[in-house]
Image (cartoon, rainbow, N blue to C red; front, side):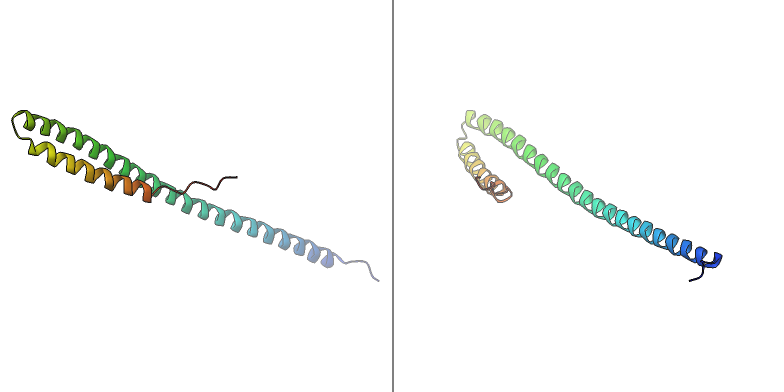
Length: 114
């Protein structure tokens, strides 16, 4: 068997470099894919937080509105209009039921007991 020539050694080094370049390219692709997945999950989380904030703000508005309507109904009752209190009572019951149903529908089930 003859000793490797300089060309054989160069070809061998080029092959090793090509393998390394392929490894780096695969690693870069893997990192890019991971970044894309992470970006997608971040977008999902951002949307979830925005939706949660909207729901919380809606609940705050609802509760503030109920307080204002109670004040108005009490003032009307003091002026002799008892129908305002009866109407408000029905509205509060209806809104309470709707809010309870929405909370129940959007609350994850409890994890099974160990």
